[in-house]
Length: 354
Image (cartoon, rainbow, N blue to C red; front, side, top):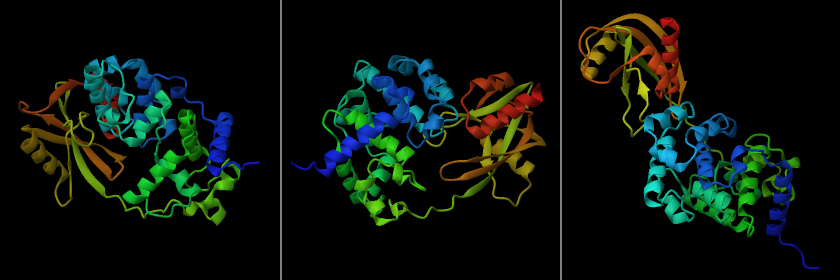
């Protein structure tokens, strides 16, 4: 009898495992390329549990690609608020407009055209092509990198282009004909549920007998771990400027961190100066506003991917006409897209104003 090659055994055992153990996720109950695309963008650098809190609300608000393309960016950012990495929302909005205008509202079903859309890299494109269109396109997200690194004992640095190229080849070589959708989702689930970063559940893994990392006795050595740098911690100061029951906000530039979100004006502070006087001078020089900085409003913290911020906020009264930014009633703050740290300030302001 002719022996079955390991590749075919891997495919069969993983698909069988997925049929019994695959996660029940809302984006797996549709073949709508738009809904699948939204889920894949949300899942970039974000855990499934977090995405579940936003996915259905987003699709309820923007049920079609046409609805998203026609929406105001501010509304898109507001629905996205709290999910983080806001460039994803901006790219998704921009890409929807391109698809609507250039592709008659139909998401491309080929790699080249998908990669030309903002916010879509090769792995996201592969997920859309395989899951929505069942095309034989490989994927290589974080979970899949870990699974393949362990399965084939890839010990090279994942930051090197040659290593990533090898992993792409491995991912593509394992794809079963006609079953790319299920297989790619199975790889994702295996990495999320069994082949986890710490304490992998090797004895529950359907691919255990083929795994070179398991055979080595130290599966956690794969993939190669790089030493994480300590993230910098910045001190900042913010002005809660109030005039006649209205509060002054400024909108961040569309490009860059938190692009398009509204914020209470703030500045980094390196110490050595009186906080109130420093804040007053910054408000005057950068915003053209003359203010009186009054009592301390509170301390607020937020950790981003590459740095941490501790923000001291102060009540300020405006005494001259403003030149930049906009004034909003306190109740309007609920409607504006903000970062977590500014949302905390807004919620505190709403509490004290009741």
